[in-house]
Length: 338
Ligand code: PEP
Ligand code: MN
Image (cartoon, rainbow, N blue to C red; front, top):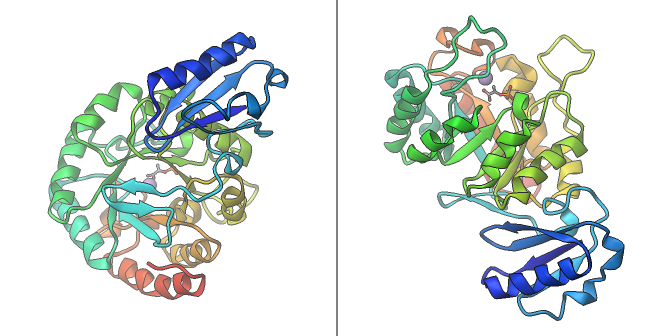
């Protein structure tokens, strides 16, 4: 069972609910989000009824949730959640396109990238400073210096920044640079200790789908973050492994409506790591928006052939602009805007 408390909940009100749970032989997980505080009952739920809690002060609702994922489930919260990224809404009517290079390389490359992202009409920027590379002998990212370069470049256009966190030991550095959105990559989707750490802060998190993760494993990974009190989670479908080798991964478009049914949280799509080739990105992007995605995470490089990482899949600045020109019409056709 979960017991949902309002935004203004007091410690005394929380204490009353926890005492009642403990008296029934259960324990409580308290997840304090910005919008709501959710108390999860741990133990034999058959002893509980919603009516035991709904009359208590501060309680908004109490319900049994059949699914293993609770806070992130649509059952626990009917309306779509809008994640606010420095005033930019993700998950509402407006679709957000996050664009930028795979990796932070140089100040000049990032300054140019920020300019092109802004000129294309995108409101958020991506770029990796800590890179999860398949080979230890390839470029591993600029690290802390990369965050510095990224912050400088994005500041000129007031673009919120999205960048990947691979290790909880880097979290303080991410907070020091005030990273706007923390990306958890496909290879870390089930790094539960990392998920617990980002669950303790209130920064929005983009949780990429593990490359072989089922939908329910993905939802449970998000539940780890939510259980800690961070409810600002955005799911990102980035393609999964199958028997097909023609493209890098298979974009699972079906996951979009399925996630929209199962969770109230926003869902975005990364068409770049799905296709693995720039020429596939427009078609995959268009399909994602048509299927109900709340946004895209797209790789763009000022000169893709010179990119230090993922050169094949990066759009040129002109290609990004052209893509943006096609997405508005699709968004409008399904009652949304770009
Ligand atoms: C990335 O976004 O640069 C990245 C490494 O993505 P993924 O975790 O989806 O492979
Ligand atoms: Mn990449």
